[in-house]
Length: 549
Image (cartoon, rainbow, N blue to C red):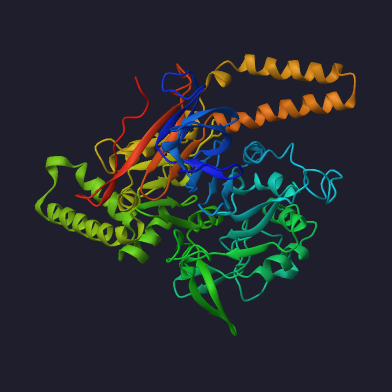
């Protein structure tokens, strides 16, 4: 390959060591992963080239170079909640949820060097100024559902004018203030439920006041211009940043997200929420069934996306719960009754052990056959290789639904400062039991965060205190600003280094990796697990043992 300056290159092998000179025996400078960005530094030998990557300059074998950008999926450590950052092979940015705090914002600060970026119209930067550029486009932002630990971190993101949200996808449920004068006498309203009015249809109840169009969302934001509702105010921040932002309600009828359809290299199939056409008065629209109280309903109707590239499938499912999984299995698996109730009856009979009578044995066999048939049908839609655990490892799940996923990798996003004890012990056991392969992989952002910097928390606090003292003692405002920026960049980096689970793939090669807490050497900084396609089984399988010992 003839290397050229100014061209983006990427690591094309599972991992490679950046070295101080053009030799396999040279000192290690850094440990790079499949898909890492490279910039040719202008020097080369027959087999080696000097590059800039991950903040270091060193030498790599030319055999590890490619001009093709891979898919990169980063499951961020955002504490309690979900946060996922994706870079597509076409260099588009996709964010799926954001957690509740500022970790997503800090990650984006680090990733796109926002604190040093000169953006036209921000901080007095003008067009024509040296280094001035447009804001970083956030091409696609997905809010799986309106729970604070999935969307509120976007507020910091949307308020920063160095970032520009273009498309925001949601599940059509929006909390808003509902006064007595706003109530339709023909609709039903529930106490402590601000999703709007409900319409009854047969034995079921549906959310009627869904927000399904871009114009409806813009109008709702304007109508509630002073609202203190956190979800609407977060969306308002996006509209204030970019008045042309496009709000898109997703449901199963969309089939694929526009631009990521069946004929594309990277596909995003929409599996949920499932809507039903309901008529009230002279109007018909696609509505969402009430699955339980407000929390159960908005969680259960999370946007469900299945990412597909080459041989790889990844499930991204928000906060699905038992009720919604029953509903999905009825729709996709042909279940004629709630599978969770079948499971409860099976456990009840199994607990009787040898005291089960003949009729109960027959009942047990019939129920298991029924579940097996549901799993076989649902797997045609839901089986994946990698799944993001729904609801942070909550105990609200169906074992049957886990069987339909049949994943080899499960990634759990959870935090320390929460009252739910996520991930739950029974969830961890079930993830392993119902995953495929001899040694299925379970990753956790919370476990990956257990690093020296946070174990020795007083050391970290002292580092920040030193910065604060230097800022206070600085002799000029310029020096204060420089030190403040250094301190914030150090905080940003923690989000990246500690807790993130990263997936890299071209659709054939697939790795899932996390940082090693205390690497013995610079050449072994990552715990890397490879998935490889098995022609005999027709599936991706875990083939690499991970960290070297």
